[in-house]
Length: 291
Image 1 (cartoon, rainbow, N blue to C red):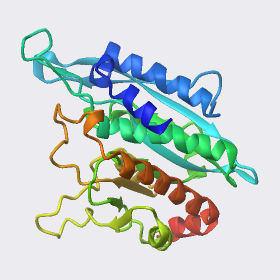
Image 2 (image 1 turned 90 degrees about the vertical axis):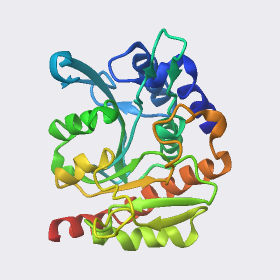
Image 3 (image 1 turned 180 degrees about the horizontal axis):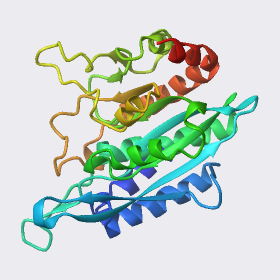
């Protein structure tokens, strides 16, 4: 099911899933249906949380419309405390549309991989209920400046103080060396012991890095995806991602070029991270308050 969802989301008929386009709307409809099938409940009567923002440059600037897809899995013993698990479902769309040079940017790794993993995680926790509640968040407009994540933290579906931590998945599907990075422990050192415990037995190499601006020639991913909106809102966050430099925002980021075995194990690792956080959420919350 994980690979099927990845293939569907990164197919040509999704037209690159750009925010405020028919392709983006088609992807969103698929996300909503998978939320339903995965046991994710909406907040209120709809999974959809629309937002607007100004997009484009100069004379081409105009109001654009994004839609986050948000749901929940209720905790078994502490339902009023929340872990957010997030991934953005949008990508960069089509370049040179209608010309002989038209290229569809399918964004298989970026970020159909994280979105499909949301469904796998939701299915797991629907069957193995967590102690605390989980918000499942598929964000729109990440490629336009983290717009969906900022809209979420401005108006969360629960009290912001009830959200203890965010686990953000963005580009977790392609690495022939089995390396998955956890970014966020420099700003939130109290999270590191739990991630180290996961890393000790993880089915991939779960590593730390890409967050220290003093390291020369190493990309700093602290602000590179939706986890940054949470950090700015004083909500601890960890970002799971890979060093997919060669395919990032390239038309070759297709389903056929993914590292399938690694991707399955990366999704399993993400589940282990959420399980570890759920088992230690009270201690994590104490670390958040005291930082």
